[in-house]
Image (cartoon, rainbow, N blue to C red):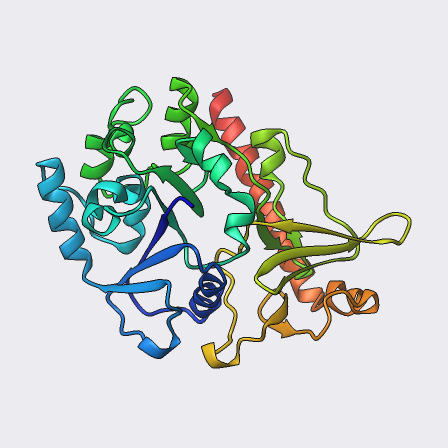
Length: 324
C-alpha cells in the first residue's frame, strides 16, 4: 500500500469544526496527517495517525525564503492557500518516507479516502483532485516543482511576492497548469461542497457541473450525514424511494459547528449551524425531520431579496459604465 501524508496548516484560534475534521482523520487509519499550527492541542484527543507540528507563520516564511531565494510575502494565514502547491518543498523533511503527499482544509469532514483513492488510482496519476480542499501529489522532486514550470499561467515569483490571493492551489493555478501540459491528473472524485440559502436549507453547490460536466442535483428531501467513517447523502427520489450517494469529503466553508471533541457522536446529520446525532441514518422517516426548510423568517427572505437586488443594481451600473 502506498504511503500518504496529508498536510493542513492553521494559525490563530481554532474553530470548533476543527474537531470534526480531527475526528474524521482518525477513521482514515492508513493515512497520516500533519497539522501545522501555533495553537496548543491536547495530545489525548489526537488520533494516532495525526501529528501536530507547532510552529509560527514567520518560521514557514523563513523556510520559503531559503527555498525560493527571495523575500516571499506571507503576512496572513490566508495567504498560505497560495503556498499549498509548494508544501512538497516546504515540508520535505516531514514527507521523505511517503510515496504521496497532499494538502487539505480543516473546515471539512473526511470520508473513507482509501475507498476512492486506491493504489490502482495512485499508480495512474501524479495529481488527484483539482481543488484546494483536498489534493494529492506523487512525491517526487520533479512533480513537487511543477508549479514553477508554467509562468504563462501563473508565475510563482509574482504569486509569492505579492500579498494578493491568487488561488494558486485552485483551478486558475496548478489545475490549469496540469490541464495545459496534459500532466496526469484525476479531475473528479465525488465530493460535497454544501451551502445554505436564505431558508437555511443545506444544498449542494453546483459548480462541479460547470467545471467537469458532472450533474449535481439537489432534492426536496435530502440530508448529509457522517456515519461509520463515511460521508453519505440520503434523499428521496421522485418515486419517494430512499436513495443514497457516498462522497470522499464534505466541505462546509464559513459554517461553524459547535461541538466539543469529547461530544462528537459516531453518527450525525449536518444542519446549517450544528450537527445532530442520529442512531440510525437508514431511518427513512427521519429524512423529513432534517431536510425541512428551517428558520425561514420574513426577515431572512427580505434580506435575501435585498442582497439579490443589490447584485442586479451593481451589474446594471457596470454595464452602463461599460457602454460609456
